[in-house]
Image (cartoon, rainbow, N blue to C red; front, side, top):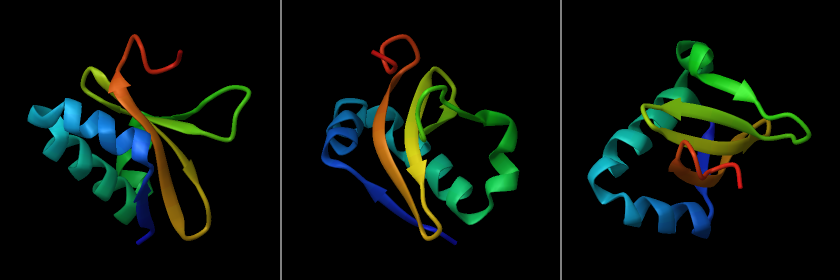
Length: 82
């Protein structure tokens, strides 16, 4: 299982979306434990090394290393890519 690192900007977004924070964190943990389980909800972002994880109307943008998943952004679908 990979270690999940949440950057300060993503942590702030989780605090703003407190009602959905547990669900979002749960999906990140599921992906960290078994990436194949969430494969249909993860796509590579073009022009970047980042990926996005779809969780309902939210998107989680992250980068992956051999041992870590680094969460950089969390937010609603429309505004996350700005």
